Length: 397
Ligand SMILES: [Zn+2]
Image (cartoon, rainbow, N blue to C red; front, top):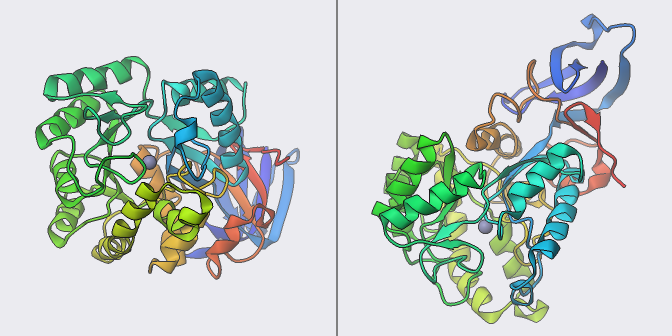
C-alpha cells in the first residue's frame, strides 16, 4: 500500500482545492481519500509526504501523433519505414508519460503502429502512458492525411474502412471531415467526407462500442460531423453560434489543439516550416481562437489535445496547451479539468482516469508550485516532482 499526503489536492472534477488530504492506494487504484489528521494508515504502507505542494490527477492528451517527430517540415519523413515509425513512437510515448501525461489518445498513425505500441506498453516492453489508439485515419481520396490514412469514397467504402480498423483493434475511429493545414494541396475550410459518409462512420464505430473523432476545421465539415453524431470535433477552427448550440445539445466535445497553429505561427517559414502550411495557418489562427472562446463561453465540453507531432509541437511539451487555453480565456481550473476529467470523458475512460477519487486509477502528479496561479509551470518537468502511473512511480531519466 502507498499513501500520498497532499498539502493541496486538485481532484480533476470539482472547483475546490482540498487541503491536507491523504490518498491511500492499493495496487493500481485509489482506495480512499481522507483528511491527513483522520487517515487510517495501514502499518506497512509506504508514505510519501507532499504537504507543501499540489497533488493532481495525471494529465490526458486527447490528440497526439506519436509517429510524427515535430519537425519543421514533415515531408522528408513521409516515406519512413514502419520500423522507424515504431521506434520513434515508442520514444515519444515515453516523453509524453515523463511529462506527466499518464493517458494519451493517438488520432492518426501510419500503419497500425500506435495500436501495436499500445500492446507493447501493456506488455511492459516499452514505457508509455495509457494509450487509446486509432490506427490510420479515414479520409477521401487525396484528402487531408491521405499519406498515411485509408482513402474511402462513398458510404460503403467508409463502412469497410471502419470495419477494417476495428479488425486491426483500433480503439477509436478518426475521420477527416475537412481539409487541413499540414497536407499540401488541401484546404482547411473545405468539407471532405460528406454528411452521408460521416453518418456511416459514426454508426459503424458506435455499433462496436467505439467513439468517433473528426478532424474538422471548416464550418460545413464541422456541421456535418456534429450532425452525424461525432463524439469529438478536433481543432474546430470555424465554429459558429448554430454549430455551438448543436454541440451543447448533443454533448459533442471540442478538442481545440491550440498548440498546433500557435507553434506554426511562432516559428514560421524562417524555421523551415513549408510555405503552404504557414500560409494556411495564417488564415485559420484568429478564427480558431475566437471559436475556442465562443465554445468555452457557451459551455461546450472542451478537452485538452495538442496535435503533438506537428511542427515544433514536441511530444513531452504537451502541457503548453494548458497555458494556451488559459491565455485564450479559460480559467486555470477549467484548463486542468479539460486535461483531466473532461479529457477522460472524451476517451470514454471517465470511470477510470482523470480524477482523484476512490476507485480511480492512481495516476497522480506531485507538483511544486501552484498550477492555479501559473498553469504554465506544468510545462517544466522539474516542477512535476513525481509521476505515478497506476500507483507506480515513473522513472524520469
Ligand atoms: Zn492531428
